[in-house]
Figure (cartoon, rainbow, N blue to C red):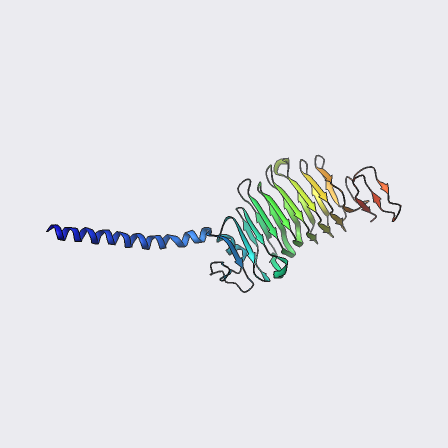
Length: 284
């Protein structure tokens, strides 16, 4: 073989290697996409779960969108729809602005949202309508040391809990401007093995839950501000060792608190009861 022929052979070998590398890069790109490529994804009531969940090719369900979203990314709603139950295993935000219509999760016989992430993850749920149809188990279930924020959500008609916080030490849920109704218990706070879990209610109504508005297990803590706890046989059920901290401005039906705040004062205007934190305690 002449030197010229040898050079041509080496050139063809190099070219073949480049072609093989090019095709392998595409072959492995699809699995990477499935694991989550986009920082922002989209769902639509008219979406398709075979799509990439982009703005122009939205998916149909949260479960598909979350698999296509990187950790710390965001899922948005384009329009109204039923987007299905979802299991969350990483930091993520699911945000459905009020102008897009109802972002529904129907969860008969199951959990609406399950949060089970690595420690110190952060999850945001905003603008969701989570409905159990009386047979659903729990609306939002948190079983990891996650910081979960729930904003402008409606969580209704679950056979156990509207929101259940049952994580290791450090788990926390903040519920703002939301409505929790028709469950057995609206919010249940019970850290695993008696460790501290913290639930915060701000400008949220917990109404007409069959057993209690809120239950707090030993070691855990409830903090409320401008919340309404109404229409349940027990507003706050504290196990010995649990704590209830009021930052004021709450409306709580009196006479049904397991461990009511002390030092009630009569409101001369309407016969309401007030405690030292400025909460109105309504007669049942």
